[in-house]
Amino acid sequence: MVQQCWFGPALFFGLVRLLGAGLAGGLFSRFRCLFCLGLTAPFCRSLFFRRCSFCLGFAATLCRCLFRNLFDRFSLVSLPVLTLFWIGVVRRTNEYGLTEPRVYLVVCGGLMTLCVLLFLSQRTGRYLWVCLAAWVSFAALAYVPFLEPERIAVQSQTQRAERVAERLGRLGGDGRLLLTPMPLADTVYKKEYRKLYESLDYIRRDSAAFARFGVKDLDDLAAIFPEAMRDYVRWGYDWSCVDTCVDTNIIELEAPVNVRFEVNAEYPHYYTNLRNWYNDHSYDVSNDTLRLFLGEECAVYRISCRDLLERQLERSGFDPAEACEPAPEQLLRLLDYRDDRCRILFENIKLERTDSAVVIQGMAINAVLMR
Image (cartoon, rainbow, N blue to C red; front, side, top):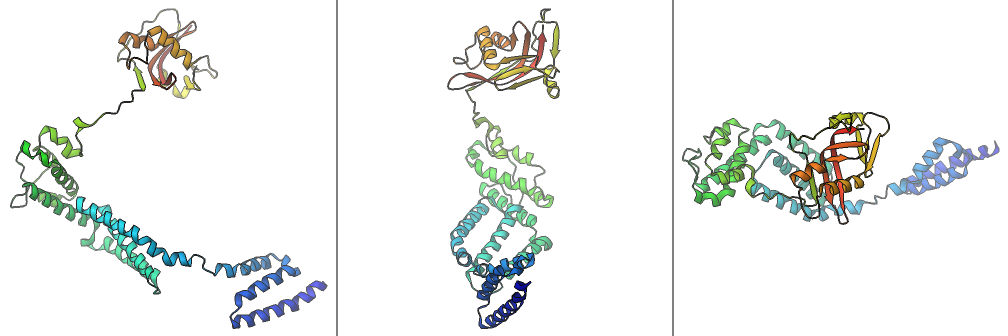
């Protein structure tokens, strides 16, 4: 009670000094004095006063603008990156023309450039000007008809198609394409024809602009090209020249279509179409072990994949280290596993050659016969 009596005058005296110092320009320094005073007073037990003291104590630190130098010089640092951006945009648009996403790219790049240039100056209202420019730009793209991105893109691709067709001698006096069969000597211009096909493929979303070229469908244009060049003009590459990447370390053992395995009375219990039993846990391959459940909660049979592979290779006579594919007789033996308890007919087995040995990567079982 006695302590609270002297705290009232002390707090009043501190507030008077705080107001006087605020008029003199040392406001935040007095905030720190009040912070120290609050820690020593009994009134600091109040949660509200603790929060106020915490905020006042860090007020000076928060007002120092620690990152002011970074943001003042950020525009200078970003100028090289901005230059590379515009070089890439100009090159891309000159080679392939404008599309709808590229129109938005140019607009956003212009806003970014405006922002960087404004922050190079020290004038006020920079954020306001950037926001105003962004609002006006996107509003114009959305509501001004001749500034619609799709319309601008179609016009750009139309001009590109006309330039390419004129260089190839395929543009008539009325602006229509000449669909005469292309001679074999013109196959050296297949990249130019590919550019023409790309532009027309984009223009056809606008039926009026597409009709100007006198082409009903792109198939009419593709029909003038030789067979060896047609795929390149349509897709940008020639299927006959595409190299197929084959992993020689993988061996696929696939059962032939309509293959038949003889079935005898040695295995009276027959389970088939196990590939459709996945939700019933018919079998599982994990931790280099094959487990057969066949509808039971616990595995009714299990075997190591390494032992299974060794038995099948020994039984079939196939050596994965010497050949990529087994003979038909070897394949049937590899896909037919037998022992004293069960017989497993595989649909496929996937083998992989490693540095040390050949291992089983995966398998699919078609049927199981149990004793």
